[in-house]
Each structure stands twice: as structure tokens, then as C-alpha cells.
Image (cartoon, rainbow, N blue to C red; front, top):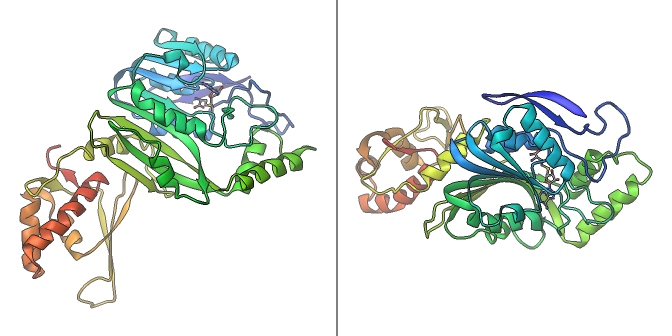
Length: 389
Ligand SMILES: C[S@@+](CC[C@H](N)C(=O)[O-])C[C@H]1O[C@@H](n2cnc3c(N)ncnc32)[C@H](O)[C@@H]1O
């Protein structure tokens, strides 16, 4: 077994799991009931999980229990589920080892079966999302047994009914990028009502690199059947019309509102970690009402970059760039840059837009009409915040 110390922001833990294939240079292959240790995927999910103090949470597909252990730091009652009885045993063992067994309710069962009829304030899951032909042995730590990305779709579709009002479901996932449909359009089709959704595509893997990655992960790299497995998997992807595999974060926030807010964004760039506070801030920002009487503030970390020829009257490009959170960039025109520059909470949005239109000799009504939606987007994306919010 692998036994290692693991520190969260406020806990010093010990975590037991199965050995990582190849870590000691040995040619190990993982067995069907292999229990994953703390992988880069586990850490990614831990960093995007919103750590508000809440009553109940669900760690679906708990493995060695790493997410459940994190949750004991800010959740009263944690339910951890899995179909692998070795994983359940390890989660129970790790909970006892870290003196949090009373907080963790370990349950056997597939997907949402063991929690039927219950609701949670937080669901965090790193499900078995690997997209494979599902031929040969099923490695339960990564294969759902469902075709393509169905496992992720099923969780996204089911989650709203399992959330309390105000609750979050956060999923680390792979999804298919098919030749015939944009990824965001496809995933938007899975989203239900009463839930705001922020989906961030962090990476696109090409099929060959993806197959290599996962054959290596299971210890098959360099084995006698490596080329056969590689070829079978890649051919299947080709036949399925899979052009690439998206990797990213799905964040669902149950608001109960009839007008769901959605953002599906490709953002492969470096972000501030842990990213969770920025995701929680998005959930709040998209629900802030914005009108011409709203007073807005530019956050302290926002920087403006101007580019242009020396001595030119106007810059040829202006970029607003966040230094924190998702570290988003927004390409701004002169009015937007002037608007953001004037947002210190003193004047209302309408007053600022009127002043800018007068300075730039623009029609005031038209400027208001054009830039109110721009201000809405800037608030949603964290370039502006509502004063006092
Ligand atoms: C990628 S591992 C994640 C482990 C851990 N939560 C983490 O973040 O590292 C996926 C887990 O889902 C479990 N699993 C597979 N099929 C499942 C199913 N149908 N229902 C619930 N859990 C399942 C696997 O046994 C495995 O422990």
C-alpha cells in the first residue's frame, strides 16, 4: 500500500491507497479493483471544490476518500460512495486514521443509487470518466462501463435534483469533442433549469495522446499487447467521430431561478489556485441585478494593458487583465476602458456612461443601450463588482 502524509489548508492527514503503477520503476499493471491514490485529478478537484461551511455533502466515487477527507474540514456530514468495496474499505480506514470517522458515512452503490431521495449542499465528484471502447477488462477506478461520455452527462442531468437550494455540484470530467458539433453546444444540451452553470474547458487532448496517457496510467505502456490495445482504442475513437477529448470543470449552482445563467468557456491558461473562490464569486455575480443606477467597482487586481505606436492619439489595443481567480482577459474598446477606469463605486453606471459619451462626443442614449450589456458581462466575468455586494 501507499501511505503518505497529505496537507490541506487546515488539516494534516495520512492517506492510504494502492501503489502508483511504475512509481518504483517496476512493471506493475493495475487490477480491476485498483484504488487510486491522490492523483493530479484528485488535487484539481480539491482545488475547485467550494469550501463554504455547509451541512451535507456527497463525494461520489470516493476511491481512497481524499475528497471526503477534505470535506470533513467544512461539512458537518459527508456521504462517500463507491462500487469498489476495496475503495470503501480504504475510505473507512482513512477516515478512522484521521479521526473523522463519525463525520463520514461510507456507502456501497452505483452513482446516485445509495443516496436516492436525499439532497446535499455540495456534491464533488471525480467520476470514472475515461472515454474508451469499454472492451476487455473494466478498470473501475476510471471506466464507468457506459459509452463515450455518458457517465458525465448522466451526472450533470441528475445533479440538480440532488442539490439543496444554493448547493453546488462540481465535476471534474472528460467529454467528447465530436466532428459534427461544437463542444459547448453539446454540453449545454445536458443542462437543466433552476441551475446556473459554469463549464470551463481547460484542455483539449488529441485522441492519440489521450490513449497513450491512459495506457500508461494503467501500466500497459511498453507491454506485449500495447500496440494492439492502442490500435483498438484509437480505431474506435475514429469510428465514433471523436476529434478530440475535452477536459475541464463542470460547476452547477442550484438557484431555483427560472432563468438559468450559463457560461461555457474555453480557458486553458494559468489560473490562481485554489480556484474555488473565483467559481463561488461567479455564482454570486451572475445573480446580481445590474441597471443604470448600479454602482460598480473595479477590483484591485485588475490591470489595463495599452498597445500602440508612440505618440498615437489612441491605443490600437486595450486589454483588461485580472491578476487573480481565472485571470481572465477582456479586449476593451475606448468606452469600456473609460467605464472600467471610472468605476470606483462613486458614480452610477448611467452617470459614468453619460460622462464618457459627452467626453467622446457620442450619443448618450445609444451609449447607454450599447454598454449596459457590456457592463453585465464585465460583472459576470469578475472585471467589475457591485459596490457593497
Ligand atoms: C477517478 S476515481 C476518483 C477517486 C477520488 N474521488 C479522487 O478524487 O481521487 C473514480 C472512482 O469512482 C468509482 N466508481 C466507478 N464506477 C462507479 C459507479 N458506478 N458508482 C460510484 N462510483 C464509481 C471508482 O471505484 C473510483 O473510486
